[in-house]
Image (cartoon, rainbow, N blue to C red; front, side):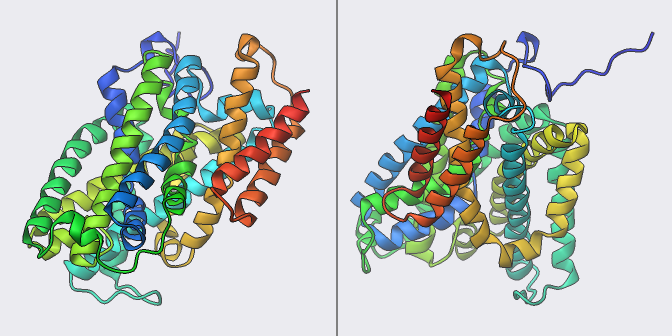
Length: 411
């Protein structure tokens, strides 16, 4: 009798009691998820447009909105043990779920590729002394992309256990080394942190700043159930998600802000180079990107598995190959498009949330329909509104429209 292969990533079934992880493991995993280098760019924008008080209030307001959104999804994932794609089957229908699965897979493969280039290009420039432009990059740069792509794809391939191990290594290292670099940068500056924040034209409002905070990770946050489904309980999933998003995002924004106002760079990597912390800079940059990239590829693998019916591991390899090959092109040409696509995922998340809380009694037991067209329409119209209406918070605008259409459809 052949032994049945155990799906440790629970691709098409709820996570059972045996598969649940400790609270500390969940916290480290979620904190690593939020260690996103692109968030440092947002920190740079916040520092350019806000004084220190405005910066803090933007973090608090945007963080509360982001925490409420991701915390709700984290609770649902932990309570049901279901991934984003399995939740989508119950909200959008079996074939209707292909839309959110395709959207999350496309954006996460895109960010995976951008992340690879965000590591390879600075290292090629600053450490190898290579000249890199949008039109050309030496072969050593492509080799760095390939090596990083293989390593990050491997950790996503081996699933949640591998992701947790990477987070246990990366989270303390990035947090400690990055904080040390910030303190050194401030101590060597002519002005204190608050005074340095006040230098320059400050033309960004707190509301607009909070919108940048929300937009920085609201798309990635939609994939929260993929990870919190391994939490011991709904309460643990909620608490670890909220705390991790507040801490992780705030730290990334602060790294980016301090980098900008003291060193004029985009991120903590350049601050460390200016402080002659050569090897620390490479370690922090690599680990910071790794913790988000393997999670992104893991979500892409789950999403494509839902569409194709192939295994998560197979689709992780396919996603990793695509992201690695396209990494440099994505970095130079696709960041703007990825930011547009970021507005398409919050409508998915709000429909998952409403679907669960409005139909909690039979959410996991009811037989899914083939397509819930109201849910599909909510995502499409919500995404259009989020991208075209610039008043307020684009992500919230999209969620409001999607929620309205979905509720109308239920009634």
